[in-house]
Image (tube, rainbow, N blue to C red; front, side, top):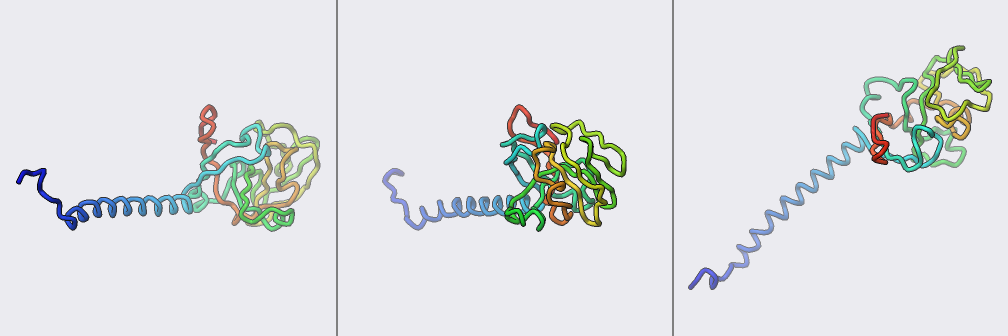
Length: 190
C-alpha cells in the first residue's frame, strides 16, 4: 500500500484542525478583551460631529482621546476635553451618553468674564490664537465653583458651551483629545 492509498483516520483528522481553531479563538478572545480594556481605561477613538471647535477641529476629524492623565491630575486650562453632557445640557435634549468636545478655559476658583470680544480670566485678557473669531456676547463675571470647569468651543459664536449651559462638573470629563489621526493631511498631536 502506497502512502497515497493510506486512509486517514477521521478521529486523527479531527484532532489536527481543532487545536488550530481553539488557538485562533483564544487569540480572538484575548484581542477582544484587550480592546475593551484599552477603550474603557486608556484611550478611545472619537469623531468631530459639529463645527464648534473650528478652526482647529473640523467636522469628520477623528481623534484619540486619552483617559489616563486625569486619573493623576485635574484638567488644565487650554486642554481640549471630551465629556459627557452635564444635567444642565441634558435639559436641552441631549442624551447623557452623547459626548461633547470643548476647550477648558478656567478651572475651579478662577473668575471668567466675556465682553467686548474678549475672554477675561481673573480680570486679565486671555490670549487666544486658536479661536475662529472673538466672542460676540457678554457673560459673567462668575467664579468657577469647586470640582467644575468653564469650557468653550474654539468657534466661539457657534458653540453650545459653558456660556450657554453653565459649568462642567469634572466628573463628566471622559478624557483629553490628544491626537488627530484623520484626515491624514492633518494628522498630529493636539
